[in-house]
Image (cartoon, rainbow, N blue to C red; front, side, top):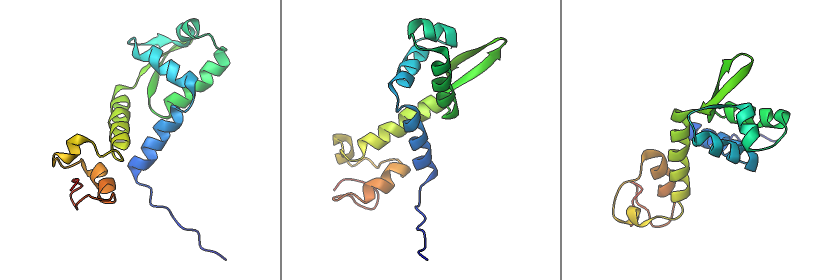
Length: 135
């Protein structure tokens, strides 16, 4: 019997993958755009701006909430949704680092040391030293 190889995914790898999955549908991107433009709103307000079936909207909201990008406060019989700012900021930071890595931007060439998570990935790139600086 063949041994299964365990892949070493870091907690940050898993978290960014979860955020990416939540963003993988254009309806969810649109919902996040609507929510980011105001402090909060009910699903019916979202449906008024973005006409999709309420059941479909509910499933998209569930996915975004599961990823931690939004939160919902129950105000019977409705739920008020808003951006979960701590995770929203974390997602922005993580995606910023993720998309910056392969490009080795001019800032990296200046000798600045990358943040710890980014430095690990930069070390494996050709032309990087042990600190994650581009040489």
